[in-house]
Image (cartoon, rainbow, N blue to C red; front, side, top):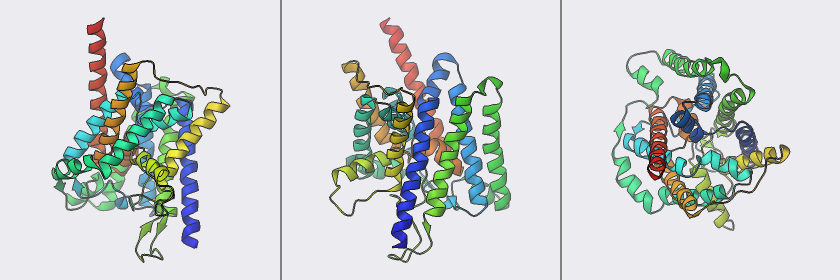
Length: 367
């Protein structure tokens, strides 16, 4: 009974954290695709600085929780010794291309649904379906038998502190150095330009970063059970992966569809990821209503529809292959200092930039 109560608490807190994420995203127009687009098309770095600030804050917060013993980042999916480099590159680049075609990443899709965007609702369904096919379906066979075969097994973990420790550095020193160098460096770098210091930019960067840290605490500390009464083994309550989780928005969309389709199956239950997906939509919806910005929006043309469908499919595939999206790997995974997350982040940016340049070339050619 105590475990059931704890599970319910974890789910409600996960929903609350994601609710705040959704409200902040709606208010500040936090958008990772937009961040890349602003740089490629206008040379404007404000939204990219917002993203980098969120990463820096998440690294500092997650590092502090780990160093204080509140959570163990080694028990997440990101710090595993299995370094699937090809999956990170292919999945990240595919996701980056997809988010440009679909007008936003997984988190932006949820935020836009809350604001009344029916195009994003279609993206949600297609993304979730293809993601599920990549987790357990036909694309999953290709993922496991081809992409994940290209892997390097590291003796410790793939995170930077573990790599430094393997090279002979004291583990505590390695953690402190890594967190302060990357987390502090990104934070200071993002704040270096005085014109960046606006309410929305600071709220978006700091607020989104803190929601990732809060989600780590909810799942990794409050949801941690040293000995589950049913299995007598260590467990993290309500997570799909069976490990500690934070915010990520590709696989949770697949699991949300699964729960809705198999609602009468008692083995299918609400999970941490599903609660966060619903929380983002709710937070965005409430903020949209309060500010009177809620408005219905549909597809403009057949080409617009096709672009969003293809983009959604690419994000569903790429997000699962890379084990995360712009938030799941780009902030949450990055906060663990996992090398795979950093590579995925760079691949997402590269894929998005390439697609944006292609769209611009196509536009100029038609003109």
